[in-house]
Image 1 (cartoon, rainbow, N blue to C red):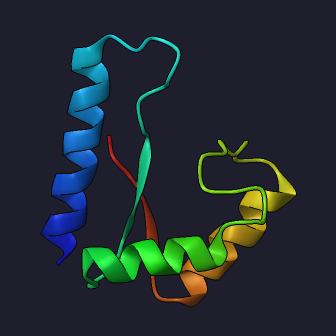
Image 2: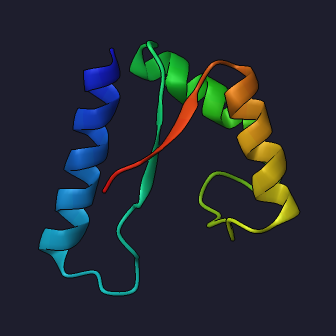
Length: 82
């Protein structure tokens, strides 16, 4: 299951890099947990603030702190990709 999320993240990163989308920074971190992809998406939606899933977070913001606490409370680990 962990490999599914890693594979998904790699595919998204590769697609962004190949498309030449310079305005979107490459991901630097990822959530890891032994869950299925549908479970991850459900948990992610649960923890996102009301502003919606397309929003980028400033890692120093209060919204991100609340989101991170929520995901960690569900058993996810926030890991660096590099």
